Length: 348
Ligand code: ADP
Ligand code: MG
Image (cartoon, rainbow, N blue to C red; front, side, top):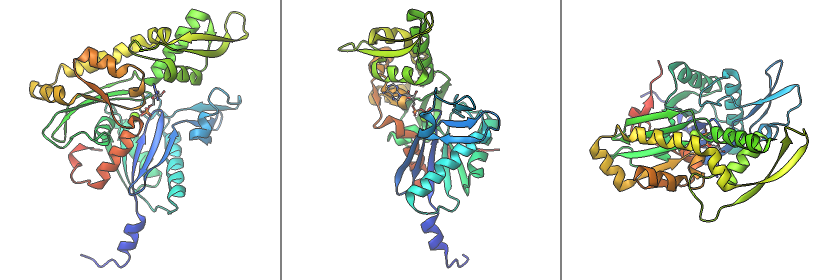
């Protein structure tokens, strides 16, 4: 072995970083420090030059309020990179923020990034290149539902079947995992964003009221649901009346919002059922024992756990801190890359 007098020093500074490049939120998990960045995956860019102007929280604040010269976008909207350069800029921004937070000028970190299981080769390559282009020394990709399962503490490496349903902004990912491998998986482009759109459409059709995306998300998180609630709720929404053209405020109920999102919720439920159809009986028996783990922000939709438990005939449970599962799972992989090697995605 070559003598490396400064090797230990490099080791001290070369941090390992797990990244959850989500369609809605981007998280950075620095080994030994935990999650240091958790920001919305929004970027505001100049319409003409495409030059980024604001990132993360500062960009999300501007959604629906940008001046005409600028546009707010989520480069990963559908779970894949649609705006390569902007994605790279977003990665650079979060890594820069992480460096600032950790107070160490991280020279070329090793990075594990979560990608949707339905990503194409071109998309995988784009994430890989964006990571390398933003300063990583080595980059490993892992499918998001597997990272979520690891982050949720499921026995991924054991000969026990586990099922995880990760509902994010742009995609819902379903995976059944056993012995460090995927048994069945599904990736669906119906998730949190779709529910927001359902709410906008419902309120527009029923009340002629046009509300913004951010208001719709608030409504979903406050009174959206997938199952009758013990006490139904109401909430006031504001928007523009499309008939009069004037501002208007009105009260809507959780019963209405359940109806609004019911189609999309059913699509998610059916996708999970469809995946279950392919699971071999021995693993079904494990799932009866251990249930179905729900991760991602969508797991927090009121009544979803109850709805899935009811329809699947399996106990659905919400992972601890579902929004950080993927980032924590990427951190688990960094602890022992060899052990989890078979779970990493090949890049050609
Ligand atoms: P991604 O991995 O795609 O970035 P996340 O796992 O961060 O997505 O989840 C973001 C989604 O979860 C958004 O659509 C958001 O509106 C939704 N969400 C967050 N909290 C709640 C909640 N309490 N109820 C319903 N949906 C929620
Ligand atoms: Mg996610």
